[in-house]
Image (tube, rainbow, N blue to C red; front, side):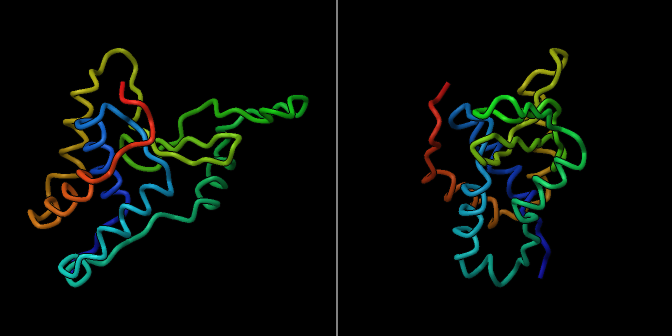
Length: 152
């Protein structure tokens, strides 16, 4: 039985979303539900042991502890703002908003790195050593998934 991190699966979800729809982010809950769908397959359940994400509150606490937010107590509508990127995994940032949504985004680079180069780097990190069966299951799940955001 092989261990697989949910962050590795998240990287694959983001790659597929970007390639298919041009979307570079996915919500915490959506990523988690995709993983649950993936692990309903008997082959995956038998051959892989999932190393799950941290709990949502734990990720947000780590973000607070690392000082990524700037607070403004005078503004009741938007009491804080995320001013720094928070890396949860290589080339993946976590973004937390005032409406309590945690999402994962492909890292934005300065103008020097093209998005396609970044996607290729992510493929080398997250997709290179996956078995063909697991890749096929991810492709099947992602083909039925439609992002909530508008396609750019």
